[in-house]
Image 1 (cartoon, protein in one colour):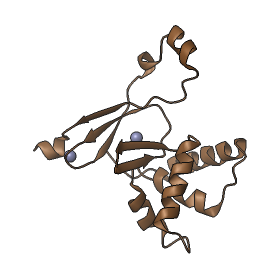
Image 2: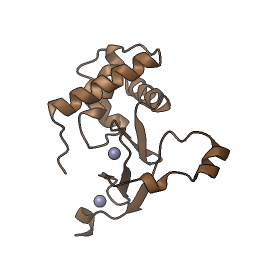
Image 3: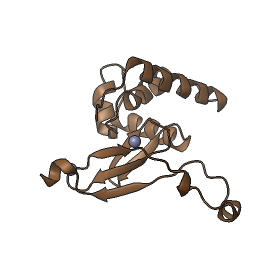
Length: 148
Ligand SMILES: [Zn+2]
Ligand SMILES: [Zn+2]
């Protein structure tokens, strides 16, 4: 799959991000915007380290710790999705419902888009639990590239 998004796709993700920040009363700082943009500009599900490598030249005084804390707070606000395995976590700026395939050999994260409607909770269970805001579905295995 092509990992680079078109400028229009990046633009629409950024617009949605800024709109959601405003709705939640969160200031769109240059730092938050750059960090989100780095995650949302590709389909590679970058790690905090990879995001840091890309933003360190654009943001002065940014540390890996700051990047990690920003990613975590954006994830808590449901503006990013956290995927992958503990200690190898990655971030995703694509908020459309989708599942992930994670290769336990190379750690690569692949998007899987298919109809997840049937994964919605039955009405009674949903009533007992609360509002479902996100479905986090991960498949683990060995990817095609590693299998060969
Ligand atoms: Zn692999
Ligand atoms: Zn994804």
